Image (cartoon, rainbow, N blue to C red; front, side, top):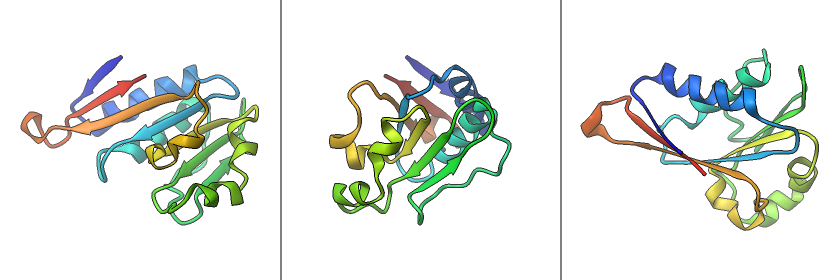
Length: 139
């Protein structure tokens, strides 16, 4: 599925809709360059899950855990991961194979450990179509 957005709010809303539809145990993988809107999408996704806490990118802690409403939410940012072994050290399997919902920013850096059934979301920008234009591909 390919979606296009022209504002930050539209990108947020697509994340929110996907969050509303998410099921226990699912893993969502976000990819895209710096500044394409992965964190905006993630904030919308968390809202869709019913999370009311402030959502920020967990760049330095790797994962933030939110345990509100219907299901635990695990928000990963693996931008700074140098090696898959670092994911093993934080016990990624306990998150990915739990009843919680995981959202992984920069997931392409650790694709060899991502569950096969994960949902991949690629966010791209095209400045020729506008500063806030985004193409969101969901596989």
